[in-house]
Image 1 (tube, rainbow, N blue to C red):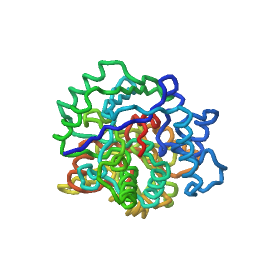
Image 2 (image 1 turned 120 degrees about the vertical axis):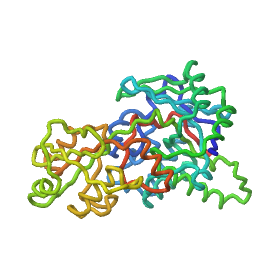
Image 3 (image 1 turned 135 degrees about the horizontal axis):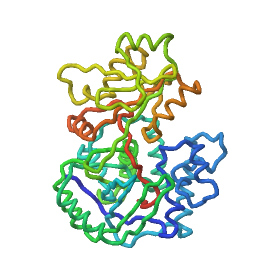
Image 4 (image 1 turned 90 degrees about the horizontal axis):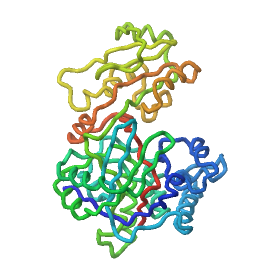
Length: 402
């Protein structure tokens, strides 16, 4: 049974929402965030990327970064840029990208559900990043950004969503990347809560570190609160929950900085490469490799009767190419590999190789949402950077404080 929890959101004024809303903290570098927020003191990047307001050589994990983020959030509240809804609410959030609609429930979910595996994960988290997000949450006394979850389609939930989106939204704006964002305040709070009790599991799509950080922050607050009951706001964190049928996963591509001499020949001998003009794999099991100024297609080997993880292209790549041929045994920590979200296109892969920033790029076929759910249900974990979800949620639209 999944618990969803209405909350009193802090939100922008309608005529200022475009100034405030920003991309999530983890899809832009500090330099990109600084450029995007330049001249706009209301940008929520000042909250989720507060190092942009400090000298460029500032350690991103220094206490002053966390204090700056908390101060920036307080300022947005104090000056009235963000105002709080009087009653706990559940909201509907819709994103439209190139005519494709993705509509979900913006609410809070339970830390206990995460701890007890009602909310299922599919990736490992890194302690340093957990520490960073936990400290932001505790210093700000807020969950500034929602995580993205998914659930198996439910007719009753969808019926409620369809009713809400027939009304006028609170927010309706187009971001600079062309994605349209709409948010509604629903009148069906009790109905949504009741209906979600019939949903057995939620699945993390995007935001594993924020989920873990919410759990750690709640544990800290519980230890500090001798009168803890479980109903306190710190026991819940914000999420946008989409039905599986709405989810769109793009490829998560790879870049290799250094390869052995004559590596093309090694690959050709082992995998029988064939040159292609289209750098996008046409089906599961295929990848495209850019090396020596040319794209090549290759078929990934597969074991007999693979389990839910072994059948993933990202696992097959790791098992048959990255580890044995490049000695990349832990891609989370290996400096010879980096990852490029599919939204940036294969042109960026070519550019990185052509300008000698890297020596090889790998264009992947996207992981399917059903594969993510299958792995999660089996209690297993995907290799790192297996999924890139688009479009991304905007931060600063609805903020949860405790």
